[in-house]
Length: 258
Image (tube, rainbow, N blue to C red; front, side, top):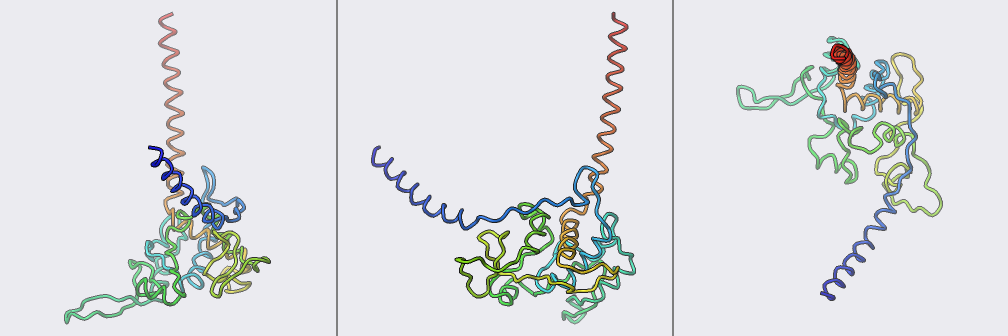
């Protein structure tokens, strides 16, 4: 029995020796809390921010990151960027997709349709890793839900690149970002001042582009947000009225008894 206890304690010490460094390396700066328009029980998406955010994704992020859960037609749905059907068709036609087989059993390429999903930048995962030094660019469809801190974290990460402090050694292919676990990230800073030109004339600063694309990514991860909040608000109104009627009924019943 005593020997078994010693074995367990020894194993625990060994395990802790591996866990402690991992926790230290995983320390990351906590992102600042942003007052997003979609926060709160009555929050909604900013349509202009969603449109600009899609532009940032399309012109910057889409060169490496896929969004496999979105179709082009989602861009016209209520509660989203609300592009017109004509705009969505035009956006889809900028891409080609593989289709088929045809009558001869061959695959062929055609212009994308509104019903097609966003076109991925790489044909498969191995090609994505090979093009990015072995690092796989994650799909962004649910990234705001997949990362602790959600939109605050994504915004902080995009704007948090800086020179590595003294004493921190960076091997080639890594970049310093204090919001990343361990402070090291394989993705170079994707944003720079005036990287693109917004159609509505908004200044394309790093801060603005980060806010806009994060706004868009949150909609992609939770497109039903506005409908859900409206439904919740109506349920609360119903429950309040129901509670009032029940209280009035109770008062009347007990008043008659006394």
